[in-house]
View 1 (cartoon, rainbow, N blue to C red):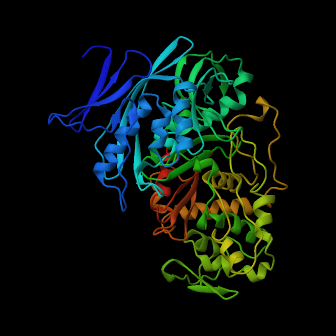
View 2: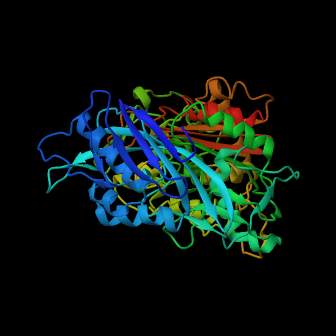
View 3: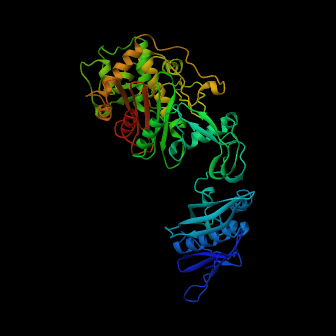
Length: 546
């Protein structure tokens, strides 16, 4: 086979691309039996058979091959008519050639799995005389057309490239933001190849600070986001730009530990901070959807919220770490009954033990004495900085503890109901409990761009921080719910809090865990991960031992 003809043998059919440059015309050559399997004639897709009911694997394979052939040939019209969203597909296939500047495209279908067909793209990106190969795997699904009854490709942006999300597109050229060489607090370079979880963070830093670092842009293929303020995500560099250097407060060693820790669990996220400064030392996610849940998630934190609730109760003088606290099997508030895990109770124990054993009723049972549904939201905001406008240098989601009433107000005492948090918020809560003062977490110092950081209106009352630290240490000691997870963390200056949050419709609760060791605090969440120490606790322990 010479350089003018490329192809792939797929299911007994020879799929050939004719032409030595640009997009060739694909055709299907007769199989060994002499019959033509003509899903493609002269670059035009043959009409797909009409039908009803589920699409069969044979029709899915034929439709996929015809679509991929038209796409590779640059025939956006023919490709579009083989999808259930012709307008979107026509634009995407056309832009693939004209705006992403992809040429010399060979697309090889794989073995269908029902109506899902994987395929491999081998192409080149050429822009202003610079060329780089582009190779990746993707997949498509074939469905029955609602009106036509034909087998059609279910159009999604991810068909064009698996990293594309809804509304996104591929573009090539000279980006507006120059590349950035991000380094950690000790000057070590941070790259998405070494630290995959930082890809989104590094893209945001480039967009926000690239021009301030003195770099010059090169030539790239990138993902154009839907939101105007979202950063572009570089897929391929054709010509290296001159990067400017930017120092972050991240710690490469802690980041490496965080990256390793989350890989053991699906849908896992973790953040580490330095309590004495608020510096974010590590951010890691292990998720199928690529979402940065560590910094931007919004889910109920379960019993880890008891750190804030305990602070409020301590400041109001309703409890003390070493004073007795009632821990009944159940307690009711405005018609709703709340219980402890497996209905346990504690007799003649102090509040510190109720905290360490995560006794729900010891907290909810005091709500009538608080007699103020706004007390917990105020504590969260005024002391722990939750709900303030954090400016970390990258996009983060503020936590939320709304004022509510009835059973929902009682549920907030134990981190359920309408409360929303992410690991960053929770790691900051632990850092505040550790030091008594809220310090807004940051990825880059405020001095880099002069932004104003959020400040809480007051610190914890004297003595409250010490009691919170003592209770968290007891939680990490034998008899506490965090003991097993924290056993691997060396030293005695360590504390933790576990949490599990029920989610409607989920078979298993979310696993939450937060802890500290010396001047390092970390918090993790695993969606559907079970109880706090089951999965999130092991992640935090892995970070704290870095």
